Image (cartoon, rainbow, N blue to C red):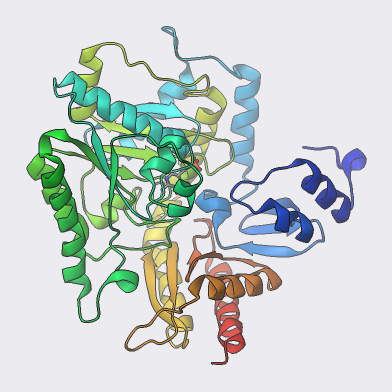
Length: 460
Ligand SMILES: *Cc1c(COP(=O)(O)O)cnc(C)c1O
């Protein structure tokens, strides 16, 4: 911890220094520097405090990651103890260490049958880079190196390394990145509210969007396709839950053409939906999973790739796998992950999300918001939700300037000490999984108030 006696500065000093020296991720630094960043100084449970003493309820668990909430002594102790015992050693040259061994064993228990091998990195982005390496190595091991193409989705998010962003389908990121990883193609997202024609049911739309995968495979030739990757529900894209017809169809198509199915579980993993992994909520069976965020609840960086035996065993047979990071399987991160899993599992947090707080949150949110004239649809399960802003409810009509409406709403959130994210014309919530009923009441009340204020600004 910084020594606050000697480093205590005024908010204004912090903002000036931040503007002078700190480049923020995904930000327009010109306008941010003029306005000044909000300085977050401490946090506990589901609350943050800023340098002006405001207490803010964090409806986003940081960036979808602080699953066990802020200020957990168990995680701090695990990090400290591990730093004193063995702060670092690599796992490259015929060495290993207890934290990474224990974590791998525990992950093999938590993940579905057949997931028995785990490769570590430092983020979700690196996880998806690793996925590409694994997919290509797998097909090479099977003697089919021409199976190179990975199919992904427009408005999917898979991170911000070059490979992560190439896999993702966020146009504004691609524009700033003329060189992309090759052999990646995109199909459309299963976003019924935003993209289905009038009169098309979610059921039919889900099937139609899944059918795009089959059409793309046939266009490319199945023998050239390596894998399909998708988030079980799209997170950064707006908490978009696909229609129920979607994943079973995707599964069927991947099986039919022998294509690997990769679930990017970076947000969905570690209890967000009330299941340990979000694909379990949707009922499909991936071959590979990308993990990060909730793996360590964001206390220290760590990502991992879970590899099904079907994929792992041929790679292990094939010999050298030429991939790794200095910090792959970092002992401190692994120790924190173990303490985090202990809270989520033995502390009953994931069970609580499934059986108690998740259903309560979903019900409260719908009760508070369904009657709003500008809420067209609410998606979600467990402790994640996406709320569609709309100009008219029936027939459904989006705002022409939906992104601006989202920002109006977000400004009200800011003013009301609520962290709720705006993605275009969708408002997102994803609070820490330890949130209590009383805190859910506060979160939902504030969200409803901010949406009502937005509606009022727009003249409803
Ligand atoms: C956040 C995220 C990533 C990228 O993780 P980083 O740790 O930011 O690199 C990848 N996939 C999904 C689904 C994510 O939400």
